Image 1 (cartoon, one colour):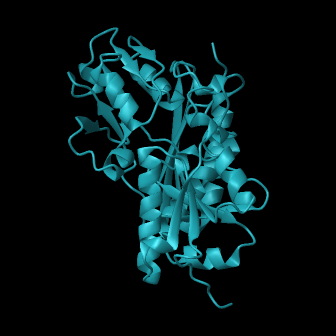
Image 2: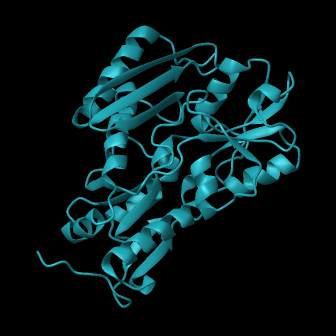
Length: 318
């Protein structure tokens, strides 16, 4: 097959959400493709698509995501446009992505993974242990809520949604004494001036696929597939294969507090996973290691181990 490269009159259309972070991820994708094929930026169009999760008229800022929907809130409309041919590729934060893609679409391209850690943000406190009893902490993440309450059940955790800029403004307005953001997002937005303290993954295990950008395409678009293969980061793909299989086997979604992280050392992959009760009253974790090629099997095995240990009703809301 002769590769057809895009140009300014027939550009490759890159679909994305419209938040500053989503746009930064789309710009990174465009830059990597332009560099790989020595193309001008004009050979690519960034197409902003409004998704339900970003529509303030439909999604109240103080309602937990579990009451509104699941991860499809941030992907559905983009995937519909991709399937319809309105865009050629879709750029996603992988921690937002369901583990199963719609018929005809495939996720098989990942950019190099950024810092996987969570960051603690506060104007007055430098770490979680410094927070006084009863302090208000804002987060929209069920995982972070459960992990925080597991360590500090005395804290008052409130719903705290919005893009990075919105959450920083809420923090400065005193809505909460502290919040959390992903280090990856702060790095991609070049927000080095934000008072953020990275949290070791041994203290707060990150969300599945945190820090990774995925590029989705139509399964039958072989030309785009060949282009994307030039910017795919193999190691990130190997790590996510294990993490996402772990999540899939747990049947995880935005409604379930689940964390996991795969690391590589030579030809060995090590995966640590965690499941928590939504109220933080209990947490179970374990680690498995094996050949990189067995990553998905390791993810499934770890999930089954934790499911057996958790027993019936572990994830029920109280």
